[in-house]
Amino acid sequence: MAVNGMGRGTTLALDILELLARSDRPMAHGEVARVLGAPKSSLTDLFATLLERGFLEFEPVSRRYSPGPALVPLARSYLNGSDIVSSTVPALEELVRCTGETALTAIRSGDQLLVVAARQGSNPLSLTLRVGDCAPLHGTASGKVFLACMTAEERDALLKRAPLTPVTDYTICDRAVLERELVGIARGEVAYSRQEYIPDLIVLARPILNPNGRAVAALSVAIPAFRHTEARDQDAREILINAANTVTRSLCGSVKIPQPT
Image 1 (cartoon, one colour):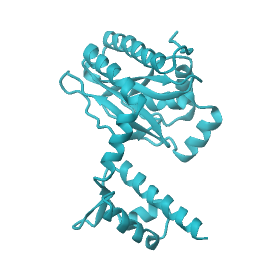
Image 2 (image 1 turned 45 degrees about the vertical axis):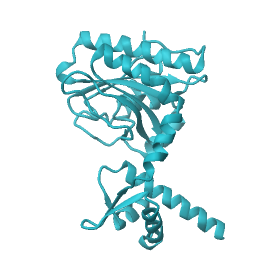
Image 3 (image 1 turned 180 degrees about the vertical axis):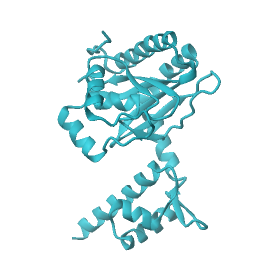
């Protein structure tokens, strides 16, 4: 029984950290308990321990919690040791050099997208995203890459947990419309987010594949809508496709990569 209790406490502690890391604002004790569906009293000792160890910070005025500095070296250790990050950084730098726009590497983290590497664009008013930022899969170009690589059963299960909720006026919330896009992406078409997560931003993405043809990461380039033209789109597509294919081959060697028709 003690083992089960310890396991439950560990799970709740991780749930707290994941929830606060993905939130765009600090959260109160009671709010965390409601979201996690846990009694408020069951979190009290966990909050105290996480605060003492530096994994959380507490704002006395608002009485809200946010991620703490002890998480930074853990994240840095993962990023420094990740083959995905080290392999894609040269590709990101090439994307920025050739397009002038911000380039990102993202992975799937649970039911969300997680940015693990980024290079800021050199053009004025380029997108600024931080490593560690999370986003919904269905609203992002990179997220659609991961959805397209899933089986129908996997996608059904995920979308039951994370339904198609709107983020902007352009977010695709119709399952049939989204599925039509995913079919094309699975066949090798470039994935797009057309102002579906961030207004006035067009994002293109391509997968980084493992030897089994599954997406382990996605490269993307973000073009502000006012700079997006057919010619710029075509240039960015070609550069992105070449960059993603190069990274896939460097990680996997010979692997069949679906190409746009």
